[in-house]
Image (cartoon, rainbow, N blue to C red; front, side):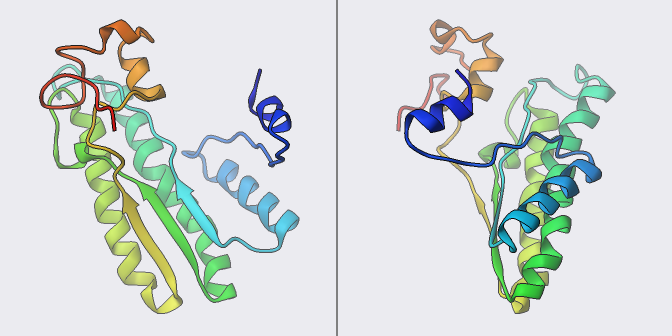
Length: 177
């Protein structure tokens, strides 16, 4: 049905834009749209991520580069684009979606490295922009193994594969809440 149709059915409205967060010009286009439509940006949530599984030896360089581009460069570009507006208006909030994998998880080398970098980037942003009244936080939802679009993608969309040995939690089963 699509997001717009779902929102309409619920009596809600939203601007729905598509952009590749790893491309500065596309990020800037979205920020420019938000400023022209709303006049300010009070918050940024960096939630775009990809997470192909793999160890260092079996992760192709192109896959590594794409994970870093989306998961780490994307938040950098988005923050860089909104920070001047937040500074000028006297504050704002940035929320980065991290992961427990940021401290390392098996078969998630590139994803773990990207999320570890995001933890460090968030801390640096918080220090650098504290006096600009910009709050920067990293949220780490759940404990891994949560049934989500990304985790379903890792098992080919087959919910039956969420059992013993499922990627995510240490005990190999999905988290339920």
